[in-house]
Length: 133
Ligand code: FES
Image (cartoon, rainbow, N blue to C red; front, side, top):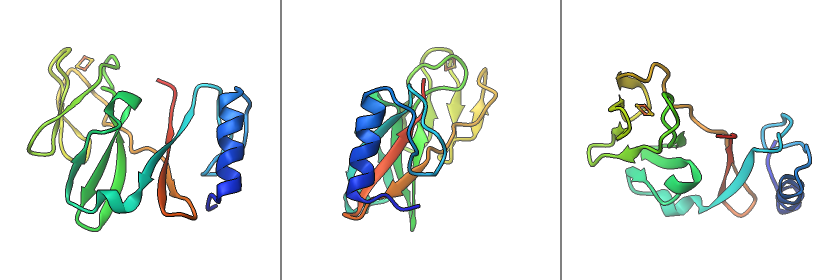
């Protein structure tokens, strides 16, 4: 399902009010999920990791034709990750590392970083569903 402006406003209002609503991927939103407007997808044309939304829990990643959003929260004990210049990710808390696709390359983390649900709205903006965390 594509989100139009009306849906987005309803989602935002519902999430802000703590209501369960339908979300961009057609599953119920929980109270702690957040819908974040990451701005025009065209802002992410260059191949690299965009850390602008790290404090909101995610990185926007452009790899060639592929645009995806990766959690910025370590799967070990939920510290925020740092994006390294080579496109990998590092956790300063206990030293876990993840490759450019979010796969664990060094523990103690055992689980890969999740790719977050996204949608483009009717104005070409990247809408990200951020899970509780
Ligand atoms: S919280 Fe990241 S390695 Fe422990």
